[in-house]
Image (cartoon, rainbow, N blue to C red):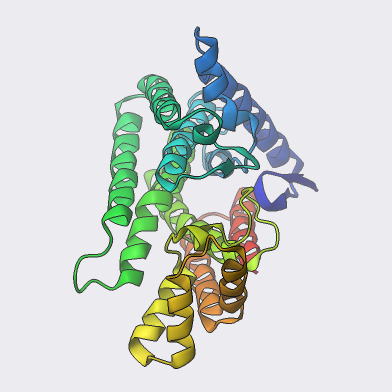
Length: 336
């Protein structure tokens, strides 16, 4: 049994382990190659987050999904590079929008250079992903384009906020379905599609990726409040301090709106205050950790992970299916 991929995923089949490890190694080499430029400054900026590491969750899903067809098919590794390049590009842009100073334990690109460099580097990565996609065929280009549209739509929806009368929690779940679920769904789809798997299998792994992607983001929401050392390199309560709406906070606000309990209203008022003050931030973080909204958010994380697991039911029993199920468990484990 060897540990590979994010969250210490264990692969108990030696042949599967070899395939996954070889694929992930090839993706890593592909990322470095795709981020090279004749302009050394662009190479430095483009490889900044590649070299900072990361979970490589999306390429791992590509490799596992490919096990339901021919795992050695030529399009699998390039499609793994595409989904990770796209993800990395969104991180450069997200950090500018969020004015983040740290990403994956290192200074963000906008903090190390400036916002213009970060935005343009993200665009450079999108361009390189598109170049690779062109060799994977028109269907791959269409799938990626649709996912990218959903991703950007989710970001715009988050920026604009819910329409009048729209439930903020429902709005948020739609946002993360676009921002996170769409690209993880593509990872499952590309792995199966490039391996030549049956269309029914492709659809199953796409649906699995969508639900797992939402669970993945909800687990991050919980971790931002509950953990002492955040896996992404962010300090606990970063989203809280920056006023970024996450599921636990939205659930708290919903409960305060419906029930108007004094303690809930007081906590909402605290969250709406200046949390750049360390003492106030620590008070808000402690209060959110003790609030039922955090446990409710955990339950939502579990629900989406269980939906992802259930989506796999029609697939044949094999080591790859067991690993995909373990990914569901790993996501839930992250959320405590």
